[in-house]
Image (cartoon, rainbow, N blue to C red):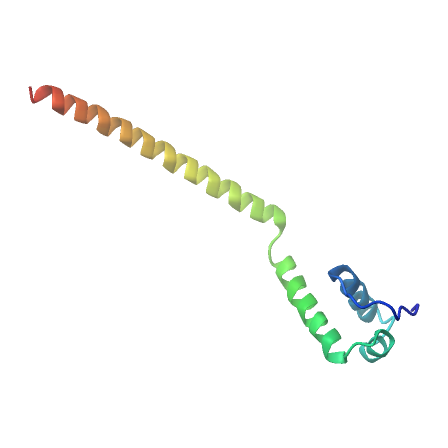
Length: 102
């Protein structure tokens, strides 16, 4: 690892890179904490967050989600079409009833 003592801000991208290095065995949590002047608890929290994110990312395939949205959109369009037909029917019926009342 190269020494980067001036770094004060840890972006998500930089945190991810450090966590990958730990998972790959290129460094350990205690080594990284000493090297970057972080606490082990900070790094372990990042690792917990990363693991939670991985679990969520692996739960659903984005393609599956897109298909779910398409299905939902199709169902909503059908419901909208049915509601419009019913509205037109009611208007015609009302006009018919109004014309027969005279």
